Amino acid sequence: MKKVYFTRKNLIELSLVFFFFLFFLFVFACVDAGHIFFAENNPIEILYLGIGLPSVKAGTVGYVTAILVFVYMTVCDAGLIFVRRLAKFSKQSVFTLKWISLSILIILLTVALSFGLGLYYVSRVNESIMPVLQMVGGSLLISFILYLFLGSIVFCVAALFVNFRNIDKPYRFFNVSEEEQYEKELDAQVEQEQDDQDNLALKFGDVQPTTAQDSLAGGSGGSGGTSVAGKMIIEGREKVFPGLSTIDLEHEGFITPRIKPVGITLEGFCHDFRNYLAHKQELYFDIKTIRAFVSGLATSKMIILQGLSGTGKSSLPRYFAKFIGSRPNFNPVQTTWRDKTSIIGYFNDFTQTFNETEFLKQMYRATYEVDRLNIMVLDEFNIARIEYYFAEFLSVLEFPENEQFIKVMQLPYDFIPPRHLSAGMLKIEPNTYFICTANKDDSTFSISDKVYDRSIVIDFDDRNEPFTVKSDVKELKLGYEELSDLFKSARKDKKNTLSNEDLKQFRVITDYVHEKFDITFGNRIMNQIAQFVPVYIACGGTKEEALDFMFARKVLTKIQGRYEDHIKAGLLTLSKMLDKQYGTGVFKESKHLIAVQVKQL
Image (tube, rainbow, N blue to C red; front, top):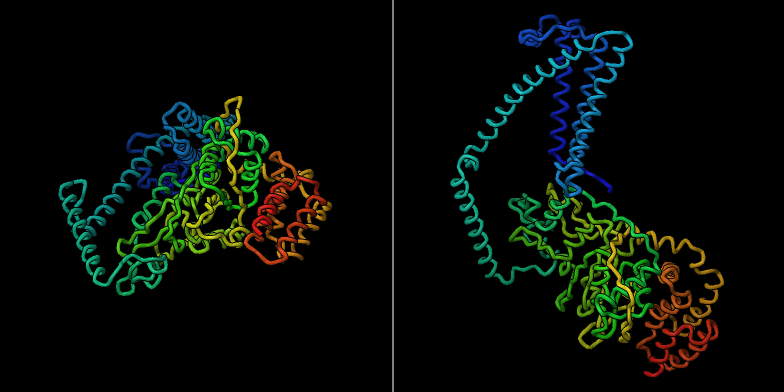
């Protein structure tokens, strides 16, 4: 659990209790027979004596006890509020035995601390505590009476002020029918104004903005809403962002606690997930594919699953989320997608509401559920140009994790946004992953090197053979922090990392590729290899398999589609070099891609 917030109502309650006990100290000093602070026969003392309470000289014991009552009773109230918030946070009733017992314990403890020091002092000086207790009790009684009296006056003045200010408006409590009629008239007026706007807009053509910028520019000067005489009229986050505000209300300001660790290794996790797919869903994947998928999560926030239709590209992220106790957000990409408004939505000037997509709401929900893997699936993502609608995400994902913010909209001045939409920017949480599925046919766009370089690509070109799982595999609830810790541990293990000899051996191949095909290994690709290889080994694979996978996806894919005269000869030489450096049949995927391309040439 990271934070348990106090609401405004809690703070108001705590303030009222604080002022009550502060007022109690004032009354206590007034009725003190020693008259250290206030004169004899002051009005409060007269009231105190008038109702038959004894006159007592407080002395050191009395004032110490009164101050302790003030401090610890305020602390007691704060503790009881905290117990209620914990119960609410745990989605339990505060009247269960657990929370009632805890509340009673807090009350008893603070009462004991309030009077304990006074009782200890009395036992040392052989004085009687009873007069002091009578004085404390009498002061509390007088404080309560005067507090209610003064509170009633303040309430009456506030009620008069509010009612005079809203004298022309009906009051729901006394006249429900009048209020309902008033609301109907307002709704009818709003609908009529909307119809008038729509009819007027139709005379000039389409009123639907095609981009967020078009939407924000209409009548607002790009400030996120319409304006009248230069004054913004957009207001009410519940109206502008109804979905995001609902998520705020659901979580009540709480960040969900960390998921309890399940205690599993990466190798065991990969085997369990593969067996789960086979046993529960009758989906059969090669263990290398599962290792590559898990290792890809440790390497990049974007994974591309491409290949033949019906090979399980869409099923893999769906059931992965189910296996770890998460929930994926599926977004079938449309051919009409041209910019980021297609996936996060846009602000509609006429309705004064942001058209929120499920994609946006899931991204926002992840800002509360920070330990639950947020799987965002873009299904058939290359049916439109990803460089258009996902361009901002591609750039932002290159930033450090604490700087990854997406601009949702420009908010107007003084507008109070949803809690985690600061300045109109939404943070991409570290637990968020974008899984993209891609088909290879004539109906799709080619994927650029810019996209390939920023992602981990897994090919689904073959249908895997079924196999038998002997034992049942249950779903587990794996949190992001535990998975991230497993990735970090894999990278810290020196047995998993690439040694200088490994890098020197691999550099022989990369240098040849650079010289023969003019393809360079940038820092991004080398960093990805350094992140990918240790995790792949921890998942049960070998160093050579991991390098083979990355070399095939990051280098050989860039040679595909090139038909210069020297390409075929260069590929044949590269194939022999792979055998020489790593042994025959070790770099299987790379040699397979080379053979396919040589055949095409």
